[in-house]
Length: 66
Image (tube, rainbow, N blue to C red; front, side, top):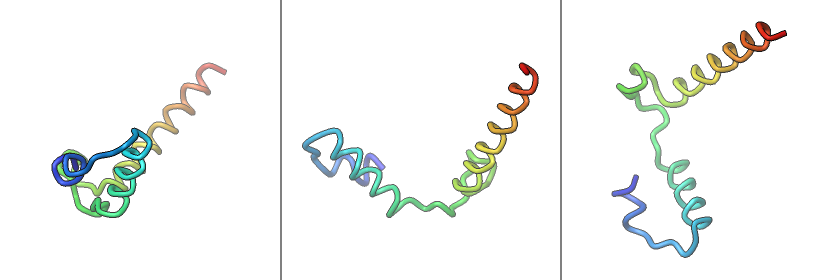
């Protein structure tokens, strides 16, 4: 991302940089490509699993405290 986008543009403010980077990610990031760092899962699937595990862990902690 830095090579393909950030270093090729100048941003007037941090807010502009955040907005343009977020737009670039949403438009050009391949959300279906499998990643070896994610155990061979696409990013969206991996993130969904992480969220589900965090929610389950939080529920266990809440139940243990109550």
